[in-house]
Length: 178
Image 1 (cartoon, rainbow, N blue to C red):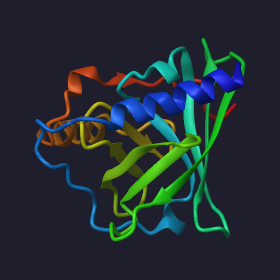
Image 2 (cartoon, helix red, strand yellow):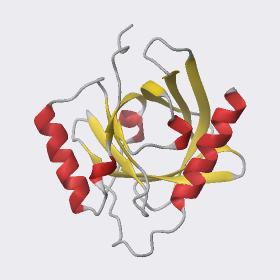
Image 3 (cartoon, rainbow, N blue to C red):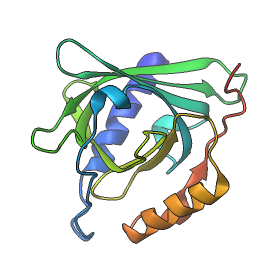
């Protein structure tokens, strides 16, 4: 089951990274301090993806390695907030010349998907990650919940960047802190 989750995660990232020619260029943030970026991020909302079907309490842990890439550990609870933990491990590689704002994520060799940081709070309290084709979008935060006004502002900015924000689904974080 774990292998299937990893394969679906990779295929999902690979598929959604293709295309997007009819959209205006997607801008990323100018630079990212990777040391500040490391740690746990909670999924606040996201476009639904097949590899996340049935996920509750989704979060990502990023750790810098001494080999120059970022270790990625995605986890969620399967089918309910009390469900069995599901984990996918991968690697993220910085795209040179992007100020660390574009990465390529790999959960299954040789496939890699775009991980573009398109918004990042000055204090690294929230981030918005997407792809140039706008087929996926994640709003992440350092805490399991964010202020509703802030959330609406983030969504409005995503709409301005040509994302179909009607596809956003709130993430269940009821198990956070357990």
